[in-house]
Image (cartoon, rainbow, N blue to C red; front, top):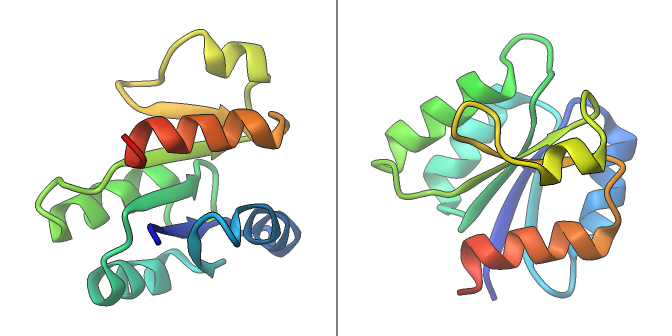
Length: 118
């Protein structure tokens, strides 16, 4: 079973995502970006699903550090509440894949599938 590291500073969002993804994927989750670095290093998940806007370390900074640890081999899908699902579907942000936090779970699963289930 493929694994996903979920990082979001909002515990409610984290719990919801874990509940929705568990069963199809092994989930590893934390609200702390620094803890996510250790999890990524030790557990080597197949995907980083990461909030863009977090205190202490934003999602782009976290992704850069995780990718450096993983020699650039870990795909990243960013979650954001700053765009609508339509805006997220229209493209990417600075070359990164985005999904809106308000997107239907089917859309989130489809996006994850294109990154790690192919």
